[in-house]
Length: 230
Length: 220
Image (cartoon, rainbow over all chains, first blue to last red):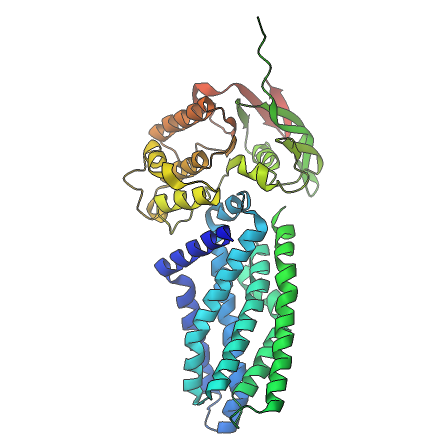
C-alpha cells in the first residue's frame, strides 16, 4: 500500500506540474458537450433528458481514453515502466497505482464536465439525482480505469495504440456504459423525488456495475502481471 | 595456510537461447558470474548483447536453457527478493522527464524501501549537484545517463546489470563511469556491463566475454 501511494503521489505531482492529463481530458470533455449541445439543437425538455445520459457517458469514455493513453505514455517514455517492473514493487502494485491514478483523473474531470453538461443542456437535476449520477460515474470510472490501464499498458509499445485502446476497451466496458447511462436516465428523470420503483432499478444497475468492477478488481492485476512480463 | 574459498556464483546462465520468430538472438550461452566480479560483454551491433542482458535480468524468458539469479531460477519473473538485489540500467535510462534529478532519485530510492539519505551525495558523485533541482527533461543525454547511473548506485543492489552505460557520456562522464564501477567493485558489487567501449569501464574489469551472432565466441 505504501508503494502504491508512492507511485500514485508521483503521478499526481507530475500532473499538478504539467496538467497534461486533466487539461486534455477536461477540454476534450467540454468540447464534446458543446458539440452535442449544438448538434442536437436542444430545446425540447423531454429530448434533453433522453440524450443527457448519452452525452455524459460518451464524454467519460472518450476523454477517459485520452487520459489512459497519456498516463501510460509517461511510464513508457525513457523506459521507466521496465525500471518499475524490475523494482521490488512488482507488477500488481504498479497496476494498482496506475489504475488508481487513472480513476482519480477521470472522476476529477467528470466532476467539472458533468455539471457543465447539465448546465449546457439546461437540466436542473434534483439533489438525489445528482448523487445517483455521481455514484454511477464513480462505479463507471473504476471499471474504465481497470480495463483501460490493463490494455493501455499492454498496447503501450504498439503502433496506433491511440486507436487500438478504445477499439479494444470500449466493447469490454459496454456493461458499465449501459449501466451508467441507465442510472443517469433515472437520475435525471422528470418526477422528483425518486420513488421506490426507480430506487430498485437504480440498485439493480449499480449492482451490475459494481459486479463488473469486482470481477476486474480481481482479474485485471493478475492479467497485468501476466502480460507485462515477457 | 588456509586457501581462500572461491567467490560464490550469484548469476548463472545455463545453455541459454532466445529466439524471436525464426532468428536466434542468443544461442546456447553458458556463463557464470562470481560475487564481486566485473564482467564486460562485448560484441558488434546485433550480436545479442542486450538480449543476453535482458535474459540475465529476467525481463525476457529464455526459449531454451535457464538463468539462475541468487539461487532462483528466472523461468518465472524474478521474485521481489531477487529484484531487490538487482539494479538494471537499460538502453533507455528509466528516468521521469518531468521530475528533477533529486526527485527521480528520491522516488526510486523509496521504491527500493531505502531512506533517501544518500541522494545529495550521489548527485554530487555523478556531477549533477548543480542541476539537481532542474527537471530531467532539461538535461542533456549525458546528464540523464549520469542520473541513471546514480539511480543504480542508490538502489543498494548486489548485482548491477548495465546496458551500454557509456551512452551519451562525454570524456568526463566516461571517467566518472570508471569511478562508478571501481566504487561498486570496492563495495563488493557484481557488475555485468554490455558495451562497445571496453576502455570506458576502466581498470576494474576482471573478465571480458564476446558475443557474435548470438553465440559466445570468447569467454576469458
